[in-house]
Image (cartoon, rainbow, N blue to C red; front, side):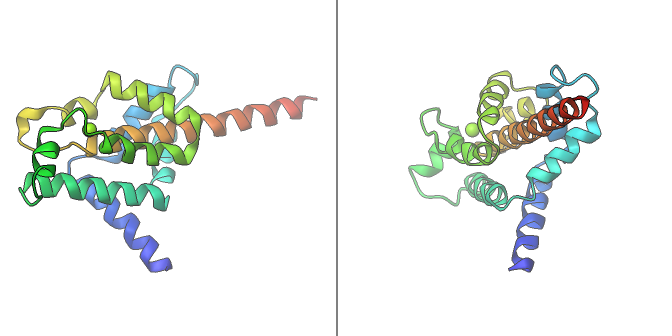
Length: 172
Ligand SMILES: [Mg+2]
């Protein structure tokens, strides 16, 4: 089982990389979401939280499932009508968002707000993934990347809140 977990994480990480998404790209999104709430937020801290989120099996499963469907769509290896739905990134499909929510879910409610916001703003790598002119299919990946950033932001926010309340306790 130990080996299987390790393998899953390695596979998820290499799939992200293969599809042109670096951990730094995701850390940039975390910075975008969180810098206004933490005065001295560093990129290292953002990256650290992204890496921690990616150790979760639920999240690795979402990554490998979504990216696999994108790749199959790109290679025309799905049956209709799913093929056209995924290739066109059909707005009413919604399963890409459900997979994203399964990522966000792991770290609680702050993640939902962050995911909704970043999905609307589409900063950085998300703008690139939404560029339909490349011929690549990123129907699932854009939501997955936004969701990883939202989950990492949520993790970061919860940790910061704990740290602050510990400091306050220490003051007493
Ligand atoms: Mg999508």
